[in-house]
Length: 115
Image 1 (spheres, helix red, strand yellow):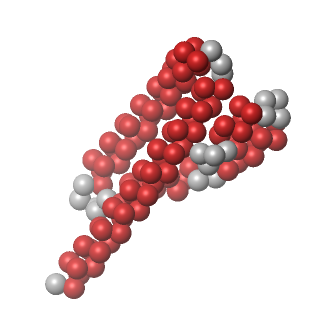
Image 2: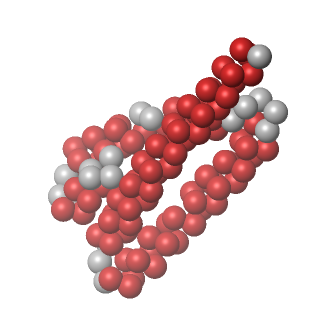
Image 3: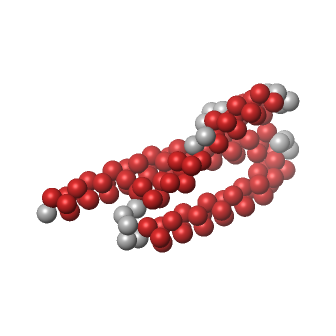
């Protein structure tokens, strides 16, 4: 996904690029929202879900402001799309981290069941 975001800046005025990007990114929203429930054991899950959504909505609110600052600083609206690409890369790294946490939690859960 991160490599698709700058295409919007390179192909302005092409609605098919916007539609394709929206479909590709929007398709995984439900899976992303379920990650904390998968990665966290049942006891700390409510606190973890709360923290996840606080960070999620803080980023949701602050991202347009940050994109505007980048656009003003670089003098082009394309800077906002490149910032979006950087956010996609950060999300991919976080997703890989969630996968590792989920695997560790699953392994420790299997060890507890064996005892």
